[in-house]
Image (cartoon, rainbow, N blue to C red; front, side):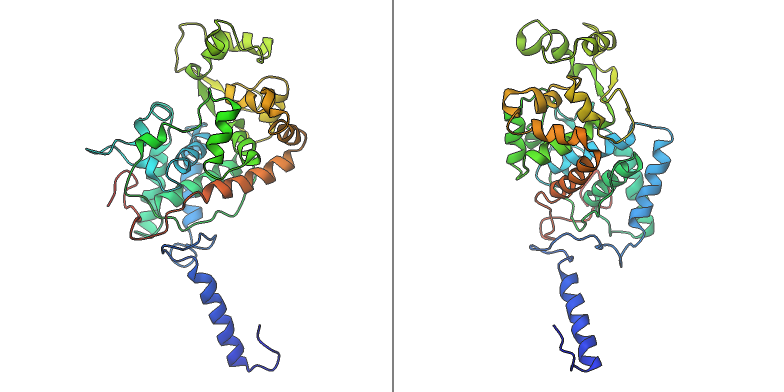
Length: 337
């Protein structure tokens, strides 16, 4: 702290030094930290540029916001938030896009390409693809009626893809024990699990991810007993036996394109469309762990929004790549420089 007797020049020097010390944590380096104002001097319009691309994209694709936040999830859960998911396959390095959890369901890559192109035009070689995913996720939630949060930035893009790692992404069929373990492996707790699962409050899901619950739950040749009977009847019309496995269904049939807490009110009445959703409330293990959190978020959208925003920040901090000896700012998100 500068004493009241210090000269103006000394005070100014101290302020400059303090700002410099704070700012250095935003520079790339092996121990660098992420910060909200990372691009303030190098690409001050980065957020608005990405936002305009998304505003344009949603005009022709109402699903795009949910798809973009899913890209961020699936990227961060595999070797950290480093845009490894965006890399195309090359000899010796198969893409995460081609793994079972992503192939045919992960989408929105063209919009990320458009955002990258716009940013490269405005400030070449500055904004990483990993940060584009983080920014796009926040904008997607906010424009859908959800919370906003200060996006921490300063990630570099990986030079590798981890196909095998992507095989261990959270699955729609996972039980609560498996889900908790997968989140714990990344230092995310039960609140993070329940809050981030709330991303299923908008978007669509293919029939192939729910047919087991409708017709052959856990190999019993019977439906999932936790699924509300009238909702099950509705879904069997949407996803008949031997029907189109890629047919789409609203993850939240009440407000399918709005980010709200209806995901949790649906679970409360056994209308979670995915097994991994309903497990948060109906699993015997949930009563002392995740079920009370579901109850809280169902009762209070404000509580859900606050927890979701914090959990997105927590997820965005999974092994951020900031060491320039290991990462880079890709010119094209689909390939290394």
